[in-house]
Image (cartoon, rainbow, N blue to C red; front, side, top):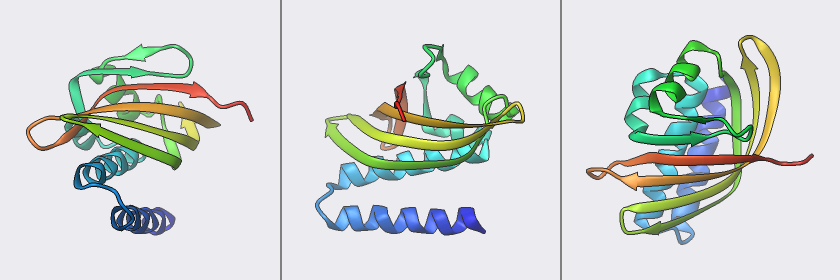
Amino acid sequence: MIKKILFAGIILVAVALTVNGQSKEEAAVAAAVEKLRQAMIDGNKESLEALTSDKLSYGHSSGLVENKTEFVEKLVSGKSDFVTIALKDQAISVSGSTAIVRHKLDATTSDNGKPGEAHLSVLLIFQNDHKQWKLLARQAVKVVQ
């Protein structure tokens, strides 16, 4: 129930941002970011694969870099398990078929059943692939609390 309420709230924020000056392309990227956020919480293999490029380079704040297969497998298996993900201070810039997204991420995790938290600054690179925005690259750094 809480996830549905959070999802509805985020959709309302996305709609408000669209009305407040976001271009059509920026709004489409914001929607892709939201779908990716939800797929990461759900650990939904099909959604994760559909939202990421086959050439994905996924950089963690620890320095670990994963490809698409590794990224998806960790989320689906629960080795990396996001219980919640909240995004704030998101900025999107679109240039042709490439989009740069920056935001702050606060999450609760349960990696391999061990509770934890993540507080990150994230850079995402999306590429428009046949009218669908897909994550091409991601890099995160820890935010000092």
